Every structure is written in C-alpha cells, then in structure tokens.
Amino acid sequence: MNGRQGLSGKHLPWNCVKLNIMLTLNYTYQFYPDAAQELLLQEWLKTCRKVYNYSLRELKDWIASRKSLSDRCSLVQEYIIPVDAPFPSYQAQQDALPKAKKVFPRLASVPSQVLQTTVRRLHDSWEAFQKRGYGFPRFKKFGQFKSLLFPQFKESPVTNLHIKLPKIGAIRINLHRPIPQGFVVKQVRVVRKADKWYTSINIQCDVSVPDPIPHGHPIGVDTGLEKFLATSDGVLVRPPKFFKTLQSKLKLLQRRLVRKKKRSSNYEKQRIKVARVHHKIANTRKDFHFLQAHSLCDAGDMIFMEDIDYRISAKGFLGKHMLDGGFGQFRNLVRYVCWKRGKFFAEVDHRGTSQECPECGGEVRKDLSVRIHSCPHCGYTTDRDVASGQVLKNRGIALISTAGLAGMETAYADGLPGVEVTQSRQVSKSRKGTTRKSKK
Image (cartoon, rainbow, N blue to C red; front, side):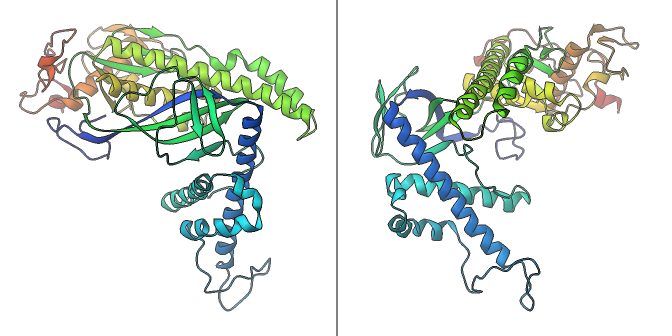
C-alpha cells in the first residue's frame, strides 16, 4: 500500500515508511434477531427511508426554486419558497428532527442518532455529487434502504453471545472471531441482505502500523476470462463462473417473480428466493477471491497487478462475464490481504503486456486468438497469460528499482531496505543484456 504512490496518491521515496496513526478495521458478523426484534428493525428501516426521502425532497425543492431567473417565472412549475430561505443543510435538517417527532410520533421509536446518520448519509451523497459533477442523490424506493448506523456507544455492545443495541436490547450473534484486545468499538452498522441480518462492527486501535515495503520474491499477476489468473511463476487458475452456474435457476425464479402481484405476500416470498441466489453468488465469489489472494501471498512477497479500469471492460459485449469474474473486487482484496500479511502490493501499467516479450523486451504482435507467446527475436516460448504476468513482474521491479545500478535491472528486489529480515525464496540475479530503458 505504500511506495512510490502512497495512500494519498503522492509519490514517496522507498526509504520513507508511512505510518497509520489509527488502525481501523471492520468485522462483519451474522446475528439472529427474534420475531419481535426483526419486526422492529424492519420498521426502523422504513422510517429511516422516509426520513431520507423527505430530506431529499426539501433539498430538491430548494434547488428547483433557484433555477428560474429573478425577473421571470417558469413555464412548467413554480416553487413558492422565499428568496431568503436558507439552504437545507445537514445542521438545519438535523435540528428539525426534534420538532418533526412531535408531528410524527413514529420517529420517536427510532434512536435519535440513527435518524441523524440517515440525514448525514444524504448530505454525504450531495457533497460527493458536488465534487464529481454527477451522481445526484436519488429517492430510495421500497426495499432499497437496507442499513442502519449506530454511531456511538458508551461501552462495548458486544459479548461472546449477544450484541446490545439501543431501544432493542440484546440480540444473539455469531461471534466467529473475537474482537482483538486493545480495540474499541466505535460504531455498528446493521445490514439486511436477503432474509439475513449482518452487523459490521467498526473497531479502532491507537497504534502505528508501517505499510509493507518491497522485499523478497516478486510475482506478476495477469487476470482474464479464459484463465482467472496467471502468475509469472506459471500458476494458472481456471475461472469458476459463479453467475453462469446458477443462471438457469435464477432465470426460473425471476420469471416466477414477475408474475406475482407487487407488494403481495407471495411476491415478497418469491423476492426473497431471488435475493438468496444473488446472495449465494456474491458470497461464493468473495470466498474464492480471498482464497486466491492468500495463495498469492503464500507464493510471493511482492504482488504486481494491472492498473486497468475494469468498469470499461464491463460495458462491452463480454460485460456479463467480466462482472461474473469480479476482477475489481479481487484486486482490492489482494491489496488488503497483502497489507494484512506484510506483503508489498503495487499496480503497474497494463498497456501492451500481451504484446511484449518478458525475456528480451521485444515487441511480439499477436491477436486474441493466439494463446501461446513465441518470440521471434530470442525464441522464448510460454503461455500467453504467463508471459503477461512476467511482463507485469518486470515492470513492477523497474518501478521499485533504486538509482545507482548503472542501467542494470535486478530480477528480485532483495537489495532494498528491510530485505535482510525476510527470507526470500530466490536469490536475485541480474538480467543479461541491456534494459529497455538503455535501448531508448
């Protein structure tokens, strides 16, 4: 996570170790409310959705009233809002919640801080829209508001068997891994997925954690549709096709869903069946990504992946298969697992990785149907995806190479600071011949 490009995007020297003053983690657990508690949570979700939509309506009305010029009226509609009316900011809408509770007693059943975080969520989206220039906040339809945030606790609400939430009491929880000692529970988010309930517990610890530095054995990882990943060491992993495996079942369930009357009891039962399949696909895909990320960390100490924007590839004619692979999520999980296990991770330029020879650096033009890399310059032959992984490894080593090597690139970065305390899997050897930089 640290290196030439740190977390803030600024270029840092490799001998500069960046420290995180506050370590923040999110632990997700499944919990099991009883019938009364589940009914109350669902009521809170409905109430918070209405608060979100009402606040957004105020925001949109204020903006629409300022669209017309001061000397003329709109031909379509006119909003009767005084000129000196202030902008409905987060502070103004938050201060209006106590008065709204007197008019709508239903709001009093929800914890006050949960209502405040609901308004805060809207204004976070509004501020993000102002920065990006697109993505105006939208109204939440029925079933689209699925989480509640409890932002503050006087003491830890988690025990070995229960989690205690305000106004609802203790709920049985599956604490499959304990919260580490020294960490403090800062906030708890309750999420509903399909017909299951999860809680994401945000914990913090005042500790300085150095980001991993380059050391040890490097691995270049190339991802694709024919092979999920191919490493520079020759490891090939076939894509499991998570969505395609359950597509026929999902198609049948969705066909039955559209024939039900909306908002009816049968419609809700069928909707949950469809949501369960989607939930299973997402969980299976994420579990596979974690297993592969740990396998990469077991095999090497430095992981280099492409900096490709997978959102563009997802819009092509192979979009369904790209989304099924979840390559963007996989790259993020590899970055997280590398940081957690002390491995170095970096993204390198993806352009022309399949058209370059990893041995001599020469250009080898080939279309997508050619799956074997055969260099006419040096005679090096290997799998096309493995060759791309080796090119990514070479580019990653060139990215972290230090000055003063007289134009020679090292195959492994065991000469960098901190390598003497790690056990590299292979001794570094200088590449024969001149580098691509020296050719230019």
